[in-house]
Length: 238
Image (cartoon, rainbow, N blue to C red; front, top):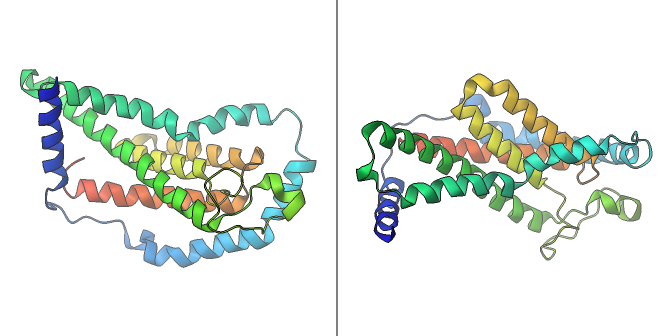
């Protein structure tokens, strides 16, 4: 087994170092350099004009019982629920001797493994980016709304839950993962979009994030996956 793992790790390392074969890129209108300012304006508008009123509604006028369903939906945005199964697939493939597989089995495992690596990368890399942003921004969670309001920050606050509202981690994860599925299984694109929106919306309903946190998180997850996809696709890793 050690020999199989060593050989598979070596193959993976060689694949990562492979030069670009294709030169495809995201459509011009969706490149970050063209969409950064519009996204920033949307987040700023929500921050100054929407966040406080929405949180007031969540705290005082939200219908009782509705949170039960959104507590279930929001779990789809937990990185551990997504990364663990993908990690298991990658580890199992690393332990298999590819030379002993039939041609069809090898092709099937290669496809499954590349998909797993891609989706795992979307969750992991977007999550790291999100944690860095949370640390730098240090926005207070909505649970402090009555005490601090919606515009309170402690930049570079020690890692933790209380001052990690922006961007929404669940929104980042679900946007990154669903965007990955969007690329892999485009026929189900409506389902992936609905899932991403539902999980992101649940974070507002549950009082864990403000609307601007969620939109910011969706954008981070989306662009993380776009970058990863084209990086891998242009090297024919996926």
